[in-house]
Length: 532
Image 1 (tube, rainbow, N blue to C red):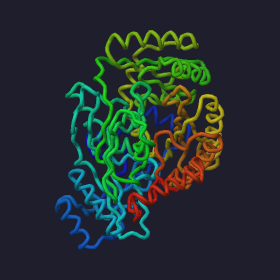
Image 2 (cartoon, rainbow, N blue to C red):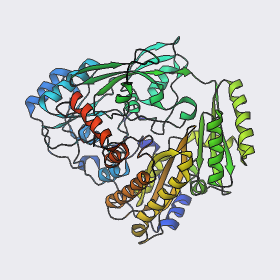
Image 3 (cartoon, helix red, strand yellow):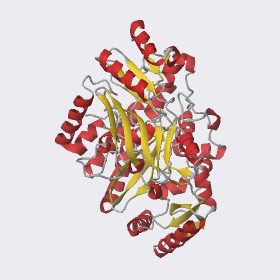
Image 4 (cartoon, helix red, strand yellow):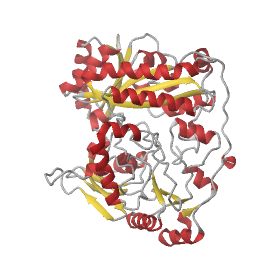
């Protein structure tokens, strides 16, 4: 696996493959004849002229070294936007109008703090860049009113700083990507654990800045639940938070940084709760006759305290397409709804929890399919985004979005989101192919509710940008109208800002603006992101 993603696709180019003949046939049956959409060569991508004059660049080089300030074509392209479908569509068409003027690679907290201070002094917009996996416009800064835009690449902040085995904590620098962080912890027989789908390319700082959750969060917890301390560089000074496992010392300011998306400061180190690396891991699948029956079974597990490490439920459409196993797309088989359960820990604990979960699922009408399909899901758990690229290659627009609500509201939210997405995409996709396909799964469960993760596919119309913008707006309106959150784990970025204001209300907006004004008086930290 390469540590740097393809500039206009997801992940490692060596892992990218076209659809199989069988899968391509199913796609053409659903959406009409394929329309090839080639990607513009890297050398032909259009960049805006750099705006930072040489004297300012010289000042940056004084802070971090000559070779750690990059203004070449490739560096700027590779730090343009994130990996949402609109981001990829623009890059595939050779449009890098949002490219930073320069890329800076600091070596540690002190250099980060120096660059943050420099940007504030010279009114240069600063975009923290970890793995570049944002899917909500979190890496696109507002340019108007600024001398230029810098991408602050944190890859050199890549150390496991300390391990406290007695307390069960570890200090990780923010630029560590998920696999490297797990490898360093494994040397101490420890694990962090949540494993989001972006795990292979997302960074520790990014997990914290976006309140990330993961496929194994039922067992390990969301990433924000694992954070016990943070170190942050702001234009007005350093912020060091987390002196105890819990306190009553006023509002917990760690929560102000978690989810702040680089708008309040740059996270440079995170102290997290870690656990012993599991001795064994077993993944299994179950089948339920309907989505409501599966939902009831998941709620029972979540509220009983017996939920496994991994717990997810695909609706009938997603089960039919076998989206839980991207390598075998279209081979869904028997119908009904698929549940994936995963168990990690000691052999004894895994076996005991498996028995308890099996009893509860059988009582709710579930039928065990064994471990073979579960192992297939585990093997392909990070491959879903590659499937999106293969679909975009042949003119099928594919994107995901997610939300969360309480159990009592889940049926309404599911129905209204599905209807909104179908209605928004049907008029466009009906020209030259069938209507859209809307798929959904429950990706995370809690005692009080769950998240819904939607995947949609439709025949691409034009460049796809207006088409998806209309669908995204319709779905976001439906979320807010149903009383759900605008995002469960993708964060706010630029894309969700209008609906964040509706979710938190005018007083909430004023609180965010006041914090922004106080910590970032010149407004240089990721301007245009998060704060309405």
